[in-house]
Length: 405
Image 1 (tube, helix red, strand yellow):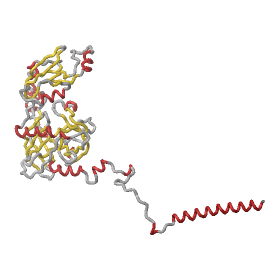
Image 2: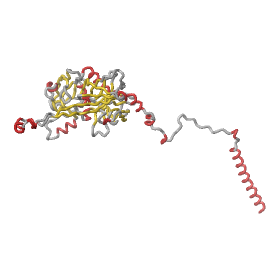
Image 3: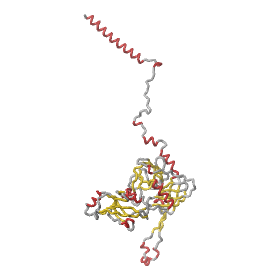
Image 4: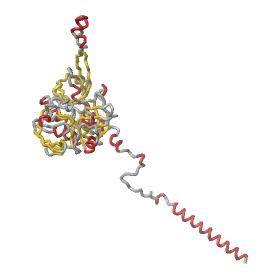
């Protein structure tokens, strides 16, 4: 019995050993394929092999690249960007006390002094509009200058003659005589500009010639009133491209090197925000300045502020308020300029302009645009709310004589 059990155990062990041996043989026979019979496993074909996120190139880096679009844009426009140096002599009057006859009677004419003269120098930028030598810049760059010098990027220097200035839009045209071989800046269209587009500022900030800064278009149609320039009639392109003193009058470019604006306004508290006049507006003004030397702007003659029912209610509940204001949307007349079209038509302080020629008016900027786009001498039908009554008045526009009016 015991012998039988031993024999059975031996047979079972032999079966296990045999099974293991056969398994090993089959495994090695499967792996041990001859080289002539082996083929590499097929790899999946993909058009864009996967990359780790950290290894992928950002869209911005792909756009800029080693030879960037900024370089191409600046190379295209740079030769047409100019530096404008100005000189102005001002005369300072002496102390009136020294000119008093009573004083001179006792102390003689020895104390009388000739008026002192001082020479002021300015710096700005501009760019060439055509081969005949027309240069576009800001009005405040060349305004009241006795001498204007235009220097090209290639080092050539020319005397400039101011052909026209428009203070209301802060634009000016300067003419130089340099033959017909001048580089010309390609002009784009500001109507195609969108928020987020590239913005490249070129000019001579702080006296550093041929300086380029890069940013984006931050917003469009930023009114001059919002910027704090109340004596202008403009809707700016706002950009975060660095604009510093000396950039004024230089071009703002898009990503392909076309001029989309004229760098013009800087706010000390803006923390890197700059403003540019849209090129579509500048082209129209430049044509008028070249032809007539000035631009006629229609005006009504009111100082105004945008009004909402909430603001009116806040005013009306103040016991110290001098007037009660209609609680409506419109433009509140704060002051009527004497002898102006508004005064002649009977517009009064405290009136709320709610409509012009059938168009609803809700903001001061909107009213200003309507008037700016009207014709000189055009009669505008102005609806105002005066207290609880509606008044329909006819106002004939007149020419704005200076920016302060």
